[in-house]
Length: 453
Image (cartoon, rainbow, N blue to C red; front, top):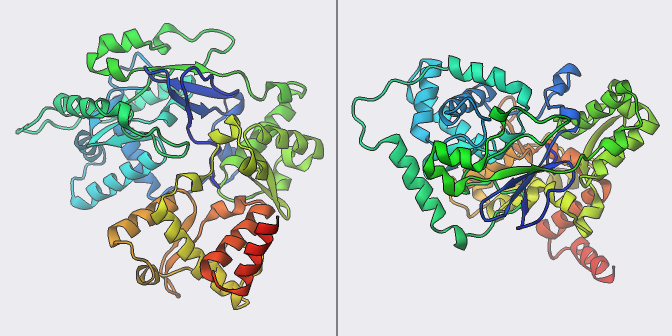
């Protein structure tokens, strides 16, 4: 369950990127693969169709903090933004304060929260007080670089403090050394974990009909010459084969654009989108092709009356492939704390109201939020760990925070539950029965059916 199709896919040495992906390769020949958008479309296409994207908490602060990070990490505007140069988090906070013209503690706390959100969503990598640009920045189109450069030039540079105990370069060098030393002993990241503490990578756009200019092709040697400290963490990017050309090649320009728009809408829209608004959903033939496009990433179309969204195909659960592994669901990256908190919310917001006849059997969205006090009473997690789990679940779209109004506020299941297939909804219902009443007759029936099947 994930609003965006695909997180980074961990690749072993010598493994090529699947079709339609960029391979971000590290010096040890391992790396990650990132899915690219069809026909160079971006989620900004949703604005043209008035489709709301996945909401971001405090989106204004988050965008400004990302801009401050770009100002600090994109030190050489003659090359692509990625990988940039690592920068201390305090320098980014100073740049953010210079950008907004305020220096109070509230703004600082909001900025720190924005850094966490950007890290969780792979826009940045933050570790040990040092920040670098995340792998999602590698997907910025070359055409947008001129606008990004102008943005960077217009952001004010923070004033240097009179007392500097440790230079910024020393902070980065120390963090880089600490990251490299245990590298061979660390567990590799899963498909859904943010790529923290792995060092930046060198990325260039995959070759199109003609090669991009030399300034847009940073190589390992070029990065090493700019900054010797980056030599050990530099890498390269290799583009995979075109993913959808075989499916889209038989359509004229208008129908091809309709298919791409429908693909972006069902993959990146916060809610199911109306069929009437997209030709790629209205026309049965185009909808079939759209289904084939999604299938190549382990996805499938999911219908909610006259609205559509996308979700993970049930076949992926039994037989994962490289393409579907790249699109692993959000639950794959949840720890024990997040799973426990999510289960509590589902029990109190869905299972109990459903048992009381207040919810239909086949829905996982609920108008009955679980109060935070209820979560604190029924969990053994420390307060800080509970809050961190709630924050991660909100960022993943698995929970929605309901503000206190006429009724008490709390947390309810998030929009990602729209993306469950009917079979997945049945499995989740069974898991909820086993969690809420493990000794009940229903739980016994579920176990008996599973053992017989």
